[in-house]
Structures are given as structure tokens and as C-alpha cells.
Image (cartoon, rainbow over all chains, first blue to last red; front, side):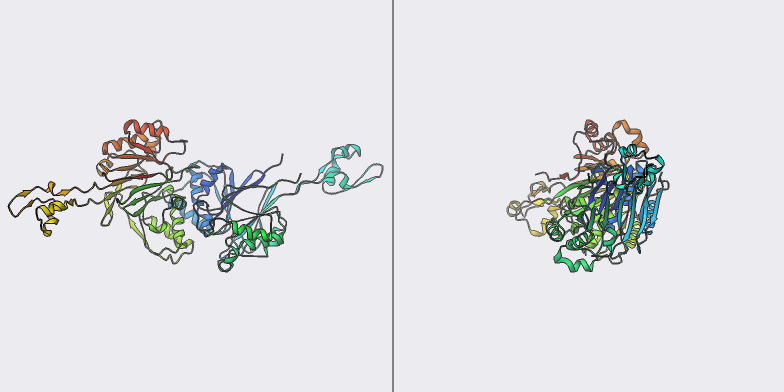
Length: 310
Length: 310
């Protein structure tokens, strides 16, 4: 059974929410780790609606300190206090965020949270590994917005290839050799026959990856960082007709997002963060698809699952 | 045509929101004035969903400074800035709220709002008239919660009775007498006949009223203040089986709310602020109705309109 690598969209609007769209928030379930990405107002409501468990979310990644990406944090934290959370909650963000959260917690008279709130300040000048466990890494990297803003790259770690049991038997491969073979070595039998590595192993499934890029102007420096990811979320606040407003406000058009996806050769592009001026994102989707056909416009409660190639 | 006196429920849950209920917020349309009462997380979303106009909301009344009654404020204000609001926004609340809002606005770098944010500090020791115009008054009054907390009483002003035109003709009543007659005077004709006031006027329709009481423990001191209101919203966080938790946390049971409604002889009781432990409020509604039959359990987007008696 494959472990999940699945993205849930909690909020897809830009700063002014509409009656149907919430400000930015997403949850990535990466092999059982639940990563919350941004936390606009209403995120805790959307978490419940999508039957995600608060208690399983231990890591929150905040791209930048605009209200539509952070206003849901204090509500989420307050609810965690009320629900008696015990496990650490890690927040990866601009170091200033801690001041805001601390002020709010003090204001509300929360002396004892019952759990540790661990702040991890982000670097907005360069790419940085910010999370790693035995199966997953998370890297932050600079975007190009009006204020310091980071994207996030979530990667499953590459697995070793599987050794073919029949070959172990056939060539009487000693256990101490197996590690080397998994790492790519050939094998020489006791008779001196050289068996090629590719005949001894089945390659591991391709490690899966997801990149989150919001908010940002068109920014080609992204391309090498997100090269070949399976899934890319790239903001597309405006249609092509508003490209001057996009430039002025350091946002992207749908076409900008598609150009980045094309250059990076991603598997699938998701666009979101739509301006409230668009009643629906059909025009934006059309404009993106004309450059990069494998594009979806996200909506609340949408799920995107990345599967291993079989 | 009657001017509206209509309450819209934006949020009906207590501190922990559920997948269907938002924390406390309501809008009262009192003769065209749109009063926002409390502002939990998600209020701006609910305002849009109910097609209420942000721009028409000029007065916000905040009962107390618990998160589930205020976390939506900064998002609402930020959206007003983005939408280019110009008219004053009045906030009636504990004076400490201004510090929180100012800190958040400074944090977000909002130097120029484009409109005035006018804070009106509330008195939590005694009843006080906090708003008055030619048609409506709003009075705050203390509740009994863990922290300083006020209820709000919204009253249409009593109108003068209407003079009966046929009588003006019949008795040749001079214009200068009409004001006195409307104020209750009898009239003496030129022949010396005394005409009783009640034969000259039609009484004005009864002035309508709404009282908001949340959060509070059972608190009989409310009764004289809200006596005879048409509509009473009283929190009912718990069922009778949890009455000890209710007392400990300074909340009410559904029965408590009903007892207050009964003693105050209100027209209709609305209960809300339900604990997330109740999947639906049927039990609470039943318990309240056993004491005060004219009770409704509120839900998001419900509307309650108070009409003049015809």
C-alpha cells in the first residue's frame, strides 16, 4: 500500500474573501505527516469541514505576513488550547510572527498553553532545508512579493531500490553485500561472474514532490528549484488583461504561472489565490492552459493525490 | 411600509467552532441601521454569504474580549481597508480592544486606513446608553461572565400616535393644537365640547426591541433591563446535565436561558452559543421549551424579523 501524498485546498481566494472562497490555506498529507501551509481566516473551520485532525497537524509553514495568510493562526492556536493539545506545534515563518502571536496570547490571558509553540525563523534570502525526517524534507525558497515571502518544496525522500529475492538465492549473495547492491554496486559471484546491478534490483518508485509558490510576481529564479515536481501550486491572482496590476502588486497572472510550470516541467499545475473580481476562474484557467495544458484551478475542499507510478 | 427590524445569525457556536457553526456574530438591521454584534472568526465570510453590505455596517458592538467573539475583527477591518472604505467605523467594546487592534494594524503596516476607526469604551459596572439617533437607541448592561462582559439592548424609539384626519376636519382643530394632541392632550372645541384624546388619535405601533445576552451565567439582574423585549438572544452553552460545568465556566444552560425569558416576559427567546459537544441542539431546545415554549435554537444564516402589530 502506498502512503498518501495528498494536498487538500482549504482556501483559494486572495486577500478579499468571497462568499465561497476562503483566504489561503492548504494541508499536505505527506506520508502521514500533516503539513499546514498558510493559515488565513477560517482555516480551523475548513480543517473541521474536511475532517482533518487538528491534533495531527504539528507543522505550520507561513509564506509571508500578509493578513490573508495568517489571520486564522490565533483562532487555530486558541482552539488547540481549549482542546487540551499536548504535542509541540512548530511554526516556520518570518521571525516577526512570534511577536504577533505572543501579543495576542498575552492579551487573551493565556499563560499556560499546555503545549510548546516552537517558532522556526525563515531565511528569505536563500533556499534552505527547514524540515527533515526519515521520509520527507521541506525546503523554503524566496519568492518575489512586496514583503519577504517564501515558497515551500515538499519532497518524499528517494528510497533505495528493492533487491530481487530470487537473485539473492540464485547467486548466493551474502547479506553483507546487499547494502552495496542497493546503493548501486554490481556483484561478482564466487565463480567470478560479474552480475550487473540492474539485473539484481527493481528501482524504487519515484519520490513524490509538491511545491507551493504564493504570493509572487513572475519569477524565473524559481524554475531550477522546483524543476520536475509532480505538483506545483502557483498563485494566479489576475487574468492577462490585468497584468499591469499584477506587476504593480507583485502578483502573477495565470499565464505567468503557466510559464513557470512549463519551464520547470512539472507534472501538474494548480492555480489559485484568485482576485475577488473574478466570479469564477474559467478565464484564468483557459489562459493558463493555453501555455500549460495540465492545469487545474483549485477550489475549496479539492484534493490532489500524487501516486507512485505503478 | 414597515422599516425592517431583523436579526441575522452569522455564528452560533461557542468557543470551539464545528464544521457547520461559526463563533458568535450577528447583524441586526434596525430600521436600516446595520449593527454588528460580536465578531468571531469567519464573520466577514458570513457577511458576504448573507449578502449584507460591509459598507453599511458602521457600528460594531463587542460583548467581551474572548477570542470567539473578536477574532474576526482584524480580518473585517483589513478587508474594509482593501475595499477603500471611507465612512467611520464605530466599535463599542472594552477599552483594551483598541490596543489589540492597533497592535495588529501596526504589525501589518497599515499606516493609513482611509477611514476613522472610532472606539467607544464600555462601562461594565452599570447600564448605559451607548448609541442614539432619531429612531433607535442601544444600551449596554453587565452580564455575569468570567471576564467583564456586556449585553446589548436595541430599541426602536416610540413614535407619536397618528392624528385622525377626519377629526381634524370635524372639530376644526387648529394646526398649533396638533402637537399637544399627539403628546396626549384632549381638545376643547370652540363650542366648549371636550373631545377625549383617544377619540382623536390612533396609537403608534409598539416600538420593537431586541436584547443580546452572551456570554453569561444565569443572572436574574437582567430581568428588569430586558423586560418585555420582542426578541431575546440568550446563550445556552450547555444542557441541564452539564449545569455544574455551566456554573464553573460562567455559562448558562438552556433552562437558565428559558427562566430568564419567562421572568422577563419576552416575545420570543433565541438560544445559541452551543457547546461543540452537542451534535445538534435538539436536547437544549427541548429543555428550554419545557419552561418557555416560544423558543428557537438558532443556526447560521437564520433570520428573525420583528413586525409591528397590524
